[in-house]
Length: 311
Image (cartoon, rainbow, N blue to C red; front, side, top):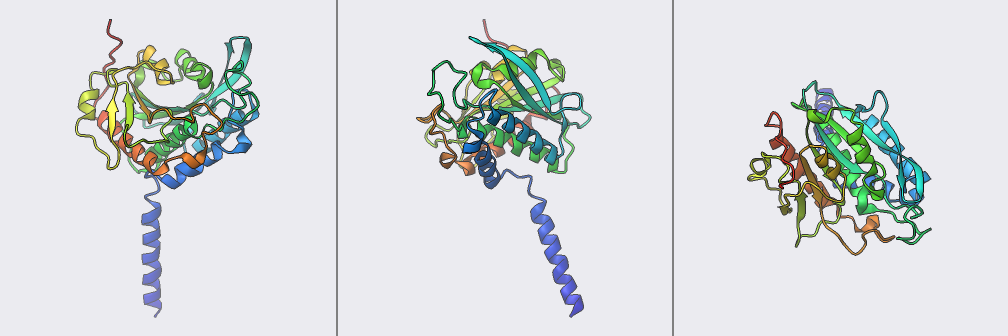
């Protein structure tokens, strides 16, 4: 009886460890939970220089630390900066940086901005001031994706041939301020970056449109990297442009190959109605799996060859 009981306990422990050992795979439940926190009313839209925005950045840093990422900026998870925007001078914000050191020569940057419109006070009347813009898709969905990528590369048990720097940018909605600051003040030399993957609004997958992937023309090797990549339930199309209205554009201008994930616009864009209930978390998890395939293929190359804008 004791032997049988011991065997049952051993099998149960093995089963539990096997299940927990797979917790690095993209999870719709975790994505929904992350977006639920970031897009909650108590964060009031994560506005730049608003309490909710500062709380969001601190929360991202906490998640990086829990996952086991090292601080990405000289012992700190934060990269503080200020910027001017129209009549607003010296607006404070910060990027959040988590680093996975694999002892490699080159680094892959994965990014997503954590800020949104907040209560719209810095937008000079473009949006209804005082109303909370929760920004579930824009861009809590991207931050959730960022955390899923980080979890995968920390916990999958493999030492990849590249380092990873995970950056959650501040001030994106006010003119890509965080990514512009990082490119001007990089913690890793830009010529040591393999490529930069940016996610902005990846939570509202439309099966008729599919997911758009930008930056396809920014490196010579992208066509070969994309060849035969498929993910069940997800269709995608590519766009050559490396520039664009999100943080990858700053890196492209800085001479870094880029890739940009975006599930497209919708009626809730930059409105108080961009709420977590409309999130498509299962589809977002599949998009992350698609991204893992592309990153895996890109890691087969020693260094991507940057291609700038054609004159």
